[in-house]
Length: 386
Image (cartoon, rainbow, N blue to C red; front, side):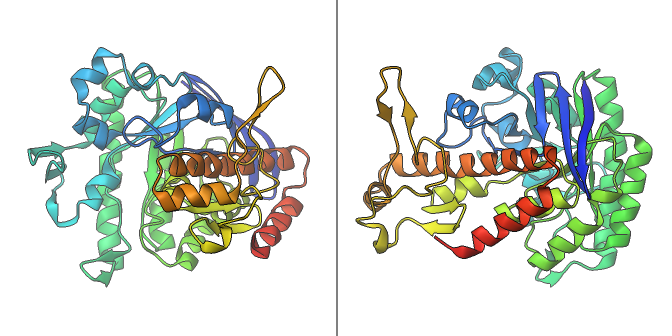
């Protein structure tokens, strides 16, 4: 089941409400990435407290471990990872692409060696749909061939991008047929490909729109291309997708990228950046990015971001009126320098809260008809620096 309602617009930016089998998602929204059935270093309870409405799971990795027998035993991913809100699963296409020379692509599917135990495996559009049926994810992604920015040391040519896009288009038809055969009650999204070529993107989206998917994603960005190319495709594709259906920009990106994506009409975003950067001591704040390992933070009593309401920055008020949490930059610097497990946990909480709260502010600005002004102030604040 999928229902999408547009509640407000400002220019190309959209405010919506997405109803799925496991709950309602207010858009635009950022979706934390939970590759192996967990968002690294963050409990489901913490995710709910910071405002996460939908999270991701990874078809490829969950197929490898724990395996379909275990996931089927639990009736899908929700009960297995104790998350009762919506889940989106990717198809495995990006992970297969990232295997590089370890994979062999044909019309039928992709042969590759398991990165876990070396077993020879074969992933097809039909098998991807069967895995995601067992996962019981609210949003299922078609199996696609992710078009790289570079191929074997050279920039992907138009002919190579066309071959990849047309293969993904044929696989989309097979995914749709198998999805329907399985009587999957959830929603299947098509993925627009075409590399850095707008006319190929246009061909791809026109074919997918004709297939009448419940929602559409924009793939093949954030795959090594220069930022200006990503922004060019972001400016081209979202606005040309059906206005009455949700639009998902895959794997993007920085806080500024999210704001620009919203301005171009995107509803859903995901990226590993908040948690990956957190594990490397890289924190996002309203006033720019912060490297907590730097010596200048050694005695700094300030929180990471004085405007932030997360547990790491402000803490929580207990029933007895005491406050737990709210840590100084000096303490976080100390944890990082000592290699303490708590360091990436607190950093991940902050970064995810920052992304999710940024999206909350965007929704409020769209509701009030002041998104353009809010976005300009946000960009200026981020340029100021911490």
